[in-house]
Structure formats: C-alpha cells, structure tokens
Length: 89
Image (cartoon, rainbow, N blue to C red; front, side, top):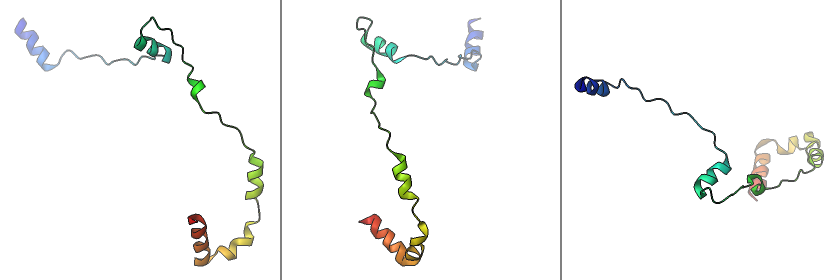
C-alpha cells in the first residue's frame, strides 16, 4: 500500500486546489500588521490632492478664433519652422 501511495504521489494524482482571492480592507491590513492593540483607522482620501475646477469657457473662447487667418502663413516649410521655433523657445 505504501508503495502504491508513493507512485500515485509521483504521478500527481492529488491536485492542489486553486487559492481563492480574499478581499481585505485597509483597516484590516493595518490591524494585522500593527497588532490588535493599536486601533488605527486611516482615511486614505485625506491624503489625496484637491483639484479645483477651472473655467473651461475661457479656454473655449480662445480656441474658437478664426483658424483660416493663419492657414497661408503657416503653410509650407516656413510655417513649420515657425511652429518648431515657437515650441523650442
């Protein structure tokens, strides 16, 4: 019997079960790391950067200007050179 069990083990008949994913909260992780004596509740959102909503209407009015004025000036290699110099400087 022992020999039979060893042969079956070598073949890999006994398949290991897949591990299941367990959801753990941040508080539970901190409790497990620090121990149960320390009661820590960490507000993760307090560390986030606050962002102000800017006026998008101002940006839109600048972009809506007539693009046809600059078509001839920006066409060809001279226009590309101007764009390159503007981006560079």
